[in-house]
Length: 455
Ligand SMILES: *[C@@H]1O[C@H](CO)[C@@H](O)[C@H](O)[C@H]1NC(C)=O
Ligand SMILES: *[C@@H]1O[C@H](CO)[C@@H](O)[C@H](O)[C@H]1NC(C)=O
Image (cartoon, rainbow, N blue to C red; front, side):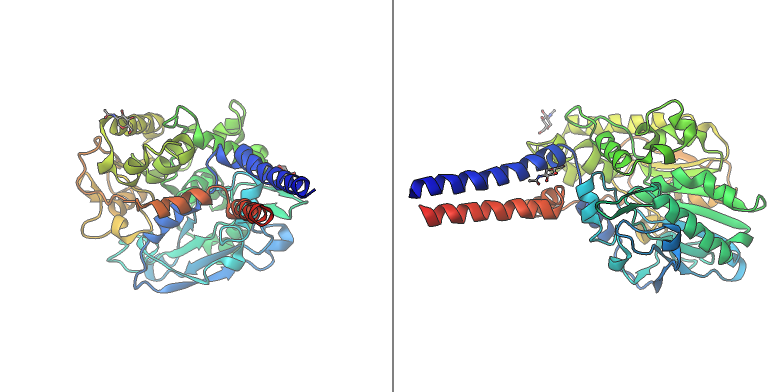
């Protein structure tokens, strides 16, 4: 009798555990999921500074137009007003922070600042391209500077919703409502404007560049800058397509097909049309692409994510490029070659600019140390801020710089990742999204307890 009870209890628990784990493996183990840990790490490097804090403003009434964050809360932005000769110039910086590529991760994202304004910082420090000091930001310091918060999970591009789960995929509407707000705050009279963004926000500035141009009077000098937005459709270290799989999830969960550039979707599948390499040569507005040739985020999440490296043989190399052997460096050189090839047609246009430095980093505009400091990264003797400024203001002939391959650049500020087992443990678990991972842990522990109790 007792053994019968024991067996049935065990079988019952094991089924539940197996179901959760199987759901996890079909949905969470195969593809890289929640990239929060890597992004948080990169953001933490956005060190605190003495910069003044700029308060968050929620866009009142946005909800009546359906322009809401994943959880239905109001979208928001931070604005620091321009002054002097910059009072009529506008810089819009689109925030980044990965994507959610399945239902579960979008639900999880609702409980973070990337899916809900309830959790957004009430004020942010403005540094680098957002700084109001000429010694930190020589060309844009006195412009109206805005950081538009990212809470839709798909680079400001979705327009659908999941009724059952109360998930709002309204990035496109957030974009539109925010732009209307900025126009009414004075951007309508802008003589100069720059749409910028980093990472997922850098992709958004590519996706929205021509729309931005069209919102402004034709007399406005309007251009776009994408920082670390050149996400390549690359083959990972196991021969798979980790990033393509992730983007496919984003496009599917938010039903982006109808929202992407029809110039692209006319001849390519929707997932391909979320990749900048298939979009940049069709952008009519002048565009500047700033990216490292060995983008840290792409190495971590696209080339060698744990799912493509189950044995962990890339862990050391991923954490610090000095731990890579020659064949691993060669893999990164091939990635750089793909990057340069992808820029080929884009770079033939006189109005475009490039700064592709051979560093291991991700996002160089908002960090003071990479944007404009004594020892900032340089290409052809110019720092990032100087190159972007020369391109924006048409001050120089040659505004397209592509670095020689690693290790020739001695001006890099490379990112070094923590390489201790517990940090990697956290990183791995975040990939499954916490709730499910915790749930399966709890079940395992309970199973263990029941077994002990009965035996
Ligand atoms: C597994 O996933 C399906 C749909 O993806 C869901 O309906 C089901 O409840 C999940 N099962 C468990 C045990 O989580
Ligand atoms: C480099 O390291 C990888 C992973 O540890 C290994 O598979 C490969 O054989 C090594 N290559 C060389 C040339 O040492």
